[in-house]
Length: 192
Length: 360
Image (tube, rainbow over the protein chains, first blue to last red):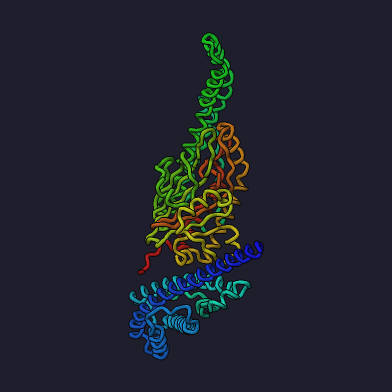
């Protein structure tokens, strides 16, 4: 009888520790996602400035500029940071931001074809700052992905997978880098 | 007089600095202009000091024995142990014999180090200076100590940033023993922007050695959390802790992690190349201070805090030691080594982009 009680106590402690670990991992993912969101908002503000300068020179890129404007509006539509309970919303947001990042990469490349824009001091400074924000996004993404990896492992691996199922904690999507990000474009270099 | 006439007859060898790496580009010209002229003078000084040293060494033993005799007799009359008297006499004579060596060492540092570092920027060399103890404590990457010894201060601007370098030895004196807890170089770079939090990189070889120290540290500084990075090689060599997980990753890009591994490799190779010299120096130090223990592994620890990047390199190697009084100064090997080391610091600043003033 005593052995059974001891076993149950140990089991309860084990379950509690797994529960604490899962909640901590989940909160860490939320914290990491908020970190990304802060940087994405910063980038969205910066995109407005870049578009305003670019429109003065890039008459032949109207389609690309419109596309960026549309994606930016969609990305900033929801001002509150989505909760990680809503996996689908997070997936959509990350996909949208990846698209925006990709289009911005194309815009930076196109700047090369406009010597006047390339030499514009405001544009040079804006691009430098944009590059810096992109680096912060990359850092936030690494933190987020590392937190997601820890959470997903816990959600998938037995015995924590059982507790995760009971608490309805789901696997989270990774924030994949866009193709342009993988190639690591350097806006400042493009301008020189 | 005899030594002077000897040096005047000597034809010094023609020394040329051959640039062997990209970062050495332009140094050959700098060497011709600013270093080569002082080498001939330094070599003359070396030969003079060497002659004096040899003379003193030859008569030193006899002088010590002669002085010891009356000292022993006086101590005997006073009913004291004569051994201490003999030790004191021999120590004083040993010091007197070595004065020319020390004088050459001082001169060599001033004549060689200063012009070499000027190649990199507005840098100046001083043999002594103040140790920024508060910053050392705030950095949280050095073990506790109660005695400091320092030398070879380089201050000025490197890549447009305020740069301070000095050699530091930290000792922990307890009741009966004195333990050397750090012996190496401190590099302090002042950044143009302030960090949000504090990030520290600990070399695993040092964190294992001081595991108790670091565990105490992290109990008291619970805000520092471990940062798990993607690079397995880096993770094998270093542990990272930070109060800001995102900033830590912003600082520790893959390029930075690679560079830090390279920097560690570079210093380790330098130590192997200079193993003979280091071993001799360590041995001499142990003989002088038998109660001091030397048992720390090589390590590089880094702290990012306020607007400072502080590197603590526990290398056990004296970087700015001129050649022995017995060796000619016409050799550029040390210069290649020193240029390589300065280049690593320069590259580190570039990789970290510490010198960019961005509009954030």
